[in-house]
Length: 250
Image (cartoon, rainbow, N blue to C red; front, side):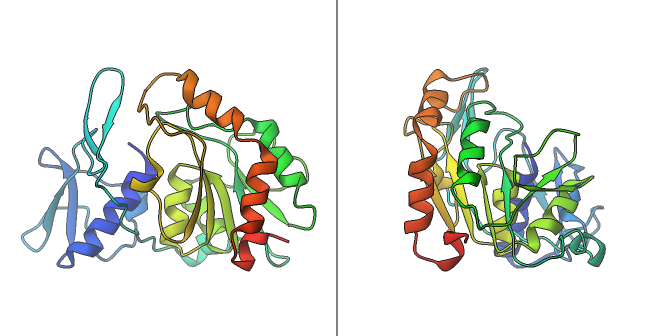
């Protein structure tokens, strides 16, 4: 699983209310950088902590899995997580005024089933010429054109950039969960890999391309076709029509 799961774990810890908690698997403590500086979370299990059992592949939004796919829990709703950033991490935010963070890349299982074509992301940027877009770069890859690259070394660095954004636009992934935790309004694109309703948040505009929710670990022609059919002009129109000024982006 990934950073998005870890952020949801902090949401469950907050909802449970009585802590601190030690997350772990099979009696062995597990720690994510997402938990750093969170007063509800402790690395070591001592008598004063409660245990949070994190079973791989069986998080609350997953009913089960086969060798090929996840089976989703249709009744799950994502809890808003928490991130406690340091002053150094928050200083990653670029100066120069308001900006929108865009993340065109997808990672982990479901990739490329969650991916929107890179050329589409570029068209979306081009549709908002007055917007100052930034993109976090950590692996030497080229950013989109007319987008300010910000070089980050860790996921927490990227969250520091995100915390200073007026909005976030990306696909289903860890940064979408981080945006909710940091109270940053978001536009999130969803393929048919997982139902948007079980992992999205009230602060987010979910733009949904697919409806069959395959859960496949490998490539899915239906998910990819659905994302190709979600053309940039449709996305930009939905962003502009969404209501809140922040989603107008310019």
